[in-house]
Amino acid sequence: MTSSPALQPSLWYKDAIIYQVHIKSFCDSNDDGYGDIKGLISKLDYIQSLGVTAIWVMPFFDSPLQDDGYDIADYYKVNPNYGDIEDVRELVREAHARGLKIIMEMVINHTSDQHPWFQRAIKAPAGSSERNFYVWSDDNKKYDGVRIIFLDTEESNWTWHPEVEQYYWHRFFHHQPDLNFENPAVEKAIYEVIDYWASMGVDGFRLDAIPYLFEEEGTTCENLAPTHAFLKRLRKYVDEKFHGEICLLAEANMMPADSAGYFGDGDECHMNYHFPLMPRLYMGVAKEDRTEIVEVLKRTPEIPENCQWATFLRNHDELTLEMVTPEERQWMWNHYCYVPEAKQNMGIRLRLARLMDGSYRKMHLMNTMLFTMPGTPVIYYGDEIGMGDNVYLNDRDGVRTPMQWSPENNAGFSHATPQQLYLPVISDPEFHYETVNVQVQENRSRSMLHWMRRMIEIRKSYQCFGRGEMIMLEPEEKNILAYVRRYEDEVVLVVCNLSGRATSLCLPLESYEGYKAREILGGENFHDIEESYRLTITGWGTYLIEITKRANLNK
Ligand code: BGC
Image: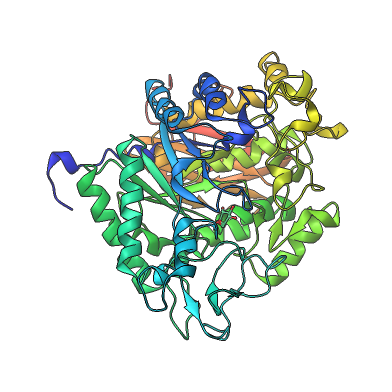
């Protein structure tokens, strides 16, 4: 990349903390039962109060909503349920005024079959560029063996179109035809879309389903060279046009080596989710054993200086188990699916709080790992208060229910009649909105919400979490996950007890012998570091210990 100062990216995403929101789920300003952009704007102060630095806004485009907006019918229009373009402009302005960046969803692998491009394609002559906006075939044997992602609902990646008398290709739902990136007109059209939104001032794009852009016979049709070549072109395009200020976040659910491929040489995506780490954090806690977590981190390659992993515990989809072995997957289903309905596709459709049995201690433990491991943490809305879920709702709707603001009607989300809500609020006794909500937790100093704020504040006070190296310590006790994060002269020791058993342990810390130690959350000074550092830790307990040479412990 050029060294012109205008093109020096600010790397803000390396120190960011991202909050994921769905507009329809956050706050309903006009009482129609759907959350909307104005509602989200009215809650920006709350988001800012969490201490997060960026918001990932899920798709808000015009859409038939058969895949919750991931089925785009018009890249230039806002779904009228959510508001209009002026509202988006205001959202960007208001977010920026609070120091919050906006990362918006950008689904380019496919569109809705209602998109005018698809409607035009089915009418266009065979062989024309318009027809070839999508991928067609006379038979459904082409690219045979390519895996089906939505196993619960789809039988094939091909669907017959009676009007065209050909099959069209789709990696997701059959109503989401894949765009044909072999066609240069598609690439051009996508650049125009990116231009439009980036010019409005958004700070980044989450590139949905990015490994699947190209197809090639005899391959898995995933992570192909032309996909990487396209991403390099896209990156160059946005860097030049938007002065290196636009961040691209890849959604590539792959093993670490393939995943790291989406960073290129620092010239593809700035960020990519660490999908393989996520299920192993849950496995570690369930098995009370750090082995798989350590192993996946060891297998994670070094990434270019200007890149960053995005780490997460939960999101709007099922907790995907695609990146674990079939035996591990079965084990996870047995352990975590408290009812059969919790299993979905290759995953589990439950929220963090349910997976952690509603235990604050276990939620703290999971979040401590999230906030202290390499990468930028992404928090799923509602997880900061330990919101519950509802497996009896359709598809992934059970983890997309209205945000719980207060014990009032509809959890304070909307004044519509309860039957009018896009989804019912959570009302099971364990996670009822009357107890699990922002208002109640604001008033309780020991609440999950206050703990999250404190954790976010700590995360922001130490650059070692976003930028530093990680040195894994491997004490004898397998239930203990311990590591040092180090950046310049900042050193933080993290100790996590993955089990419910109080444990006494010894950490090999010879290189810090004689240094001072202070537990960050509680602010207590611990005994100085010895060659072998002895600690006791309560069940599911965690320590964040700042290690300093001199008595410079006032952070
Ligand atoms: C999104 C899903 C969506 C799928 C198809 C994903 O990776 O996260 O929610 O259903 O893409 O667009």
